[in-house]
Amino acid sequence: MARHANRFWEIDCLRGFAVFIMLLYHFLYDLDFFELADIQLRSGSILYAGRFSASLFILISGTSLSISHSRALDKEFDGNGAENF
Image (cartoon, rainbow, N blue to C red; front, side, top):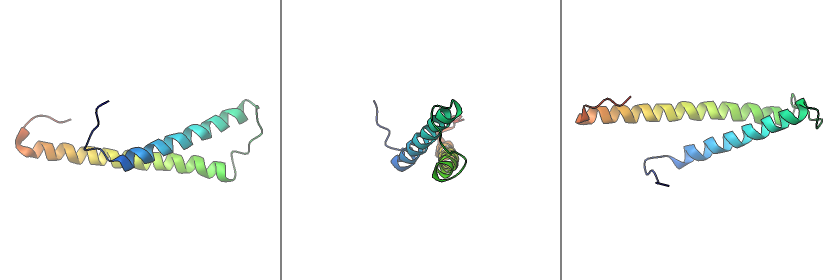
């Protein structure tokens, strides 16, 4: 697999962490929904972990979009003349 030198590993790591927490929350939600376990999802730390992961994922997605857009604009003004979007 080719390594991309212009990527931010911090953003990729945080995105992976947010996805992991989100998957864990939805797994626990399914266990509670199908009554396989009695888990209190609407209070306590599980609720805050689910909300935190969703907020973190949206924040990171916006940051990634902003970085990608600014890099595309930088390439456009480098004299390339090619369409970047």
